[in-house]
Image 1 (cartoon, helix red, strand yellow):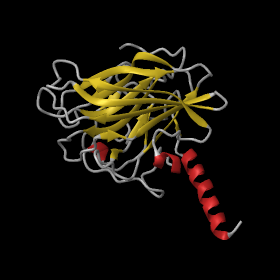
Image 2 (tube, one colour; image 1 turned 135 degrees about the horizontal axis):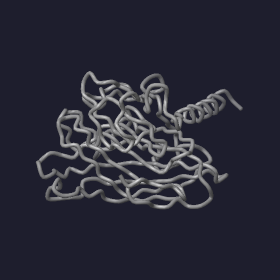
Image 3 (cartoon, one colour; image 1 turned 90 degrees about the horizontal axis):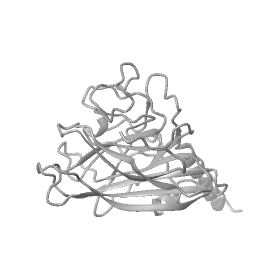
Length: 288
């Protein structure tokens, strides 16, 4: 092997190793002082422009590879293959819907390893320029997925660094929690919501800077809108990943398994929209 080929081979190994390191464990009991852990800490949770991640900074929870750069529909880890994908419009319910009630497109994807022992659940949302009844665009601050009670969970996300010609850059992930509760973030608030004085574990959105652990749920905090009033518009999410044990049985779709939350970060009405999502066989999704 000549020197150039050796360098290329070493870089490929390094890239695969770095990709694997992107997944972060979310313990069933949460962390010492929070149900959440931090990922990209720039951008003040969407109140200003977040910094693009790279190999040296802002890359906690992030994953990348040559295959992902080619297409986010490729598996985020070697040895996994796609076993299911659903694409659906997300309707805005009355009385919030404007003239066009289809406000976003959800892509719900699952990859399973060759040993049929682990699955990766992928979530991506693209918001449409569809004004709501009040004339504003829908804003999504948090995305929650259910169906993981009692299971080990690791999380990651893929941020494509080159802007899409139609939709621009995706938004990063600011934090991820083993919790059902999304926490509104305002300037000066805690980066990590506390466990102490947390509301009930079935509380969807809270202004209090605390959230209880719920091992059945994973909550990603981001900030996306087709036109964000704070001027930092990102129309689509990164690809969000949850890795957890599974079996050879195909995943099933359950109602209310995916939740999109507007926490009111910029004064909007707090809102939760629930849609069906793919879950492990036998999983239970609470219908709060």
